Length: 239
Image (cartoon, rainbow, N blue to C red):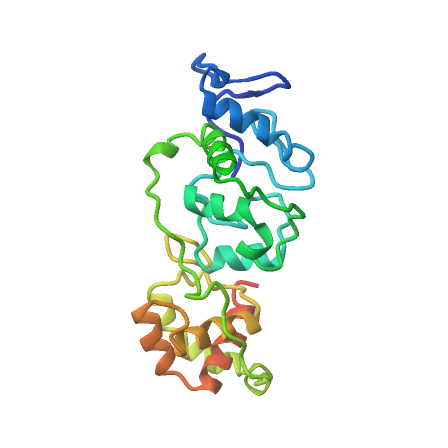
């Protein structure tokens, strides 16, 4: 669910202590979150000595784009969610903890979820202690399909074989916002996207299943063949 935290936090069986000397267990909400987090410890670690195990470490999770933590191999679904703009905020974490497989279709996280909103609130508050400066992170909802899933693209459109050279020619408009070198600077990178993923997302904008007026306009101006060409180009870009 980014690197080790700047706080000196020690994970122990009995309690967690911030480097400032404030005991988290003195706060009832955080104490509740610490206890509930024990359900997560078989897969996730948090604190100064945290490392990846079955799941990624959870330090610095607030404000991080999903599926981008270096050194951990995410599912394709989680990487795609991050490319779509999913950033871990209180709202996003709560939704994921409630039902991981509904929040990110195809996630490899095998957890039934926390149905009690008070339990989720406690765990989310607990995890926030391990994200330095997290109190200043704006809570903006992630860009996502309007109905939480992109509509299926007809097979004949997905089967189109795009010309990457033509796609490179067409890409000049894309790279006015998306970084050509694959850097993610507030706008999701599309460099290296799987071709079918690119086509699916662009057609979602084309049918207005995704709510972004600029992208809707761009997608509407492109033919199926042009979208396929862009998909072919960006899937190989950066290699």
